[in-house]
Amino acid sequence: MSKSNTARLRAVTVSVGAVALVAGAAACSSGSSSTVAASASQTIVFAESGLGTEGQQTQVAINAFEKANPNIKVSIQVLSPDSTTYLSSLEHDFISGSSTPDVFESDVTYPAKFAQAGWVLPLTQFKPDMSQYFAHEVAAGTYNGTVYAMPWFDNPEGLFYRTDLIKTPPTSPAQVVSDAEAAMKADKSLKEGIAFEADKYEGAITSFLTVDSAFGGALDPSNVNTPGNVAALKWLHDAIYVSKIAPQAVTSWQEGQVQAQFSSGFTPFAINYPFVEAQTAAPAVTGHIGYIPFPAGPGGTPGSALGGEMLAINAKTAHAAAAYKLIQYLTSPSVETARAIAVGDPPSLPSAYTSALYGKAPYFQAVKTLNNYSAPRPVTPNYLQVSTDLQTLFSSVYANASPSAASAAFAAGAASIKSDAAATPGS
Image 1 (cartoon, rainbow, N blue to C red):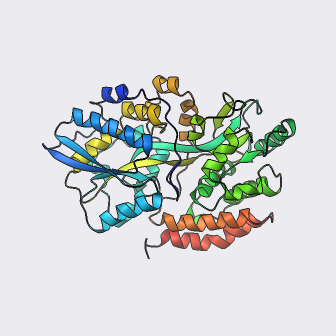
Image 2: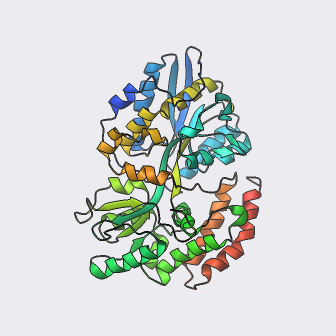
Image 3: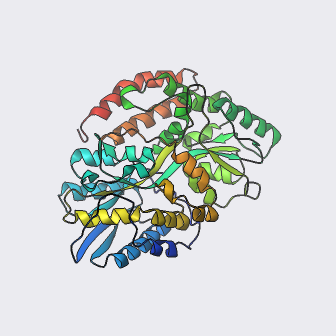
């Protein structure tokens, strides 16, 4: 998932046996056609959120990078796991014209904002081969046709289901409802049929995006009031108020509460991120977990929402070549595989999904499938305001039991969302 307004929830450690894989990748690059030279005795600053085992694994990779590149030292600047604080820290440095951090971690929703402000270096000068990455995360780092951020790891949101209760994965949104109803009837220990994030925060947008394309929707701020978008939001609304497979309590649930409901065995379906696979589950749930894109309805495509992190370079850096060399290393297949094994961060490179990874965590096979469908949130410099608008819109629907709530909300909010997407950030 991507950073939310609170500290990010992440996958727990899958295995600590990743150090050898990282060390073995010391001479690797991500396959770019650029050969990057770096002068002697440089020190570059790398800013990251530094979350627990993720921060530790970054240090493992940095240590191996420095061993392979003795003329480049990397100073890690740990900012904050809280997205608001993290973004504010970066903006403070950029606005002041600081040349550091030279390279930094970026949420998938930030690159357009940074690019429009002139804070990040276009990566086209290094001629990166973007075809090796999952296309949807490449799109998240591209602004006005120029690549500004390199995919580091993906986090596709999808549909979890209990394989002991749902014998075959559903093939349509309607079947999700009927399967949930059947499971609730058959197993009285279930408290609901589906759990999803519907609190007024960023997760409400990603859970909507997971469902949206299944109805033929696309979250384009210039045209949000479409039949597909309305149908997707109505499905989520009706899950609460019509079929009642979801409780009204979902209107205050975030990823953690959704994960707890599923892992505790209280629901046969949940919309959430891959980290759920790595959590300790109740005995009834353990070994009975399926993970798929949200199934498509007529005219739709399987659904997933893109979360994850990217790497970008400060436009003011004095060490662009060394910074890009670090990005090449951190996004090389072996290093990405090692990170996935160590902390559960899904690789952004299809080639990093290896038998070694599947041997440690077989669920990554499903994650790779979802990465082919995961839709980015709107790529706009003013995404933060658009996000606020969308959160307000969705919350108004979830608080209103009227069947026409979804259509009315999109109609009422379309103009303001389009205006905010087009506005100059900060205006």
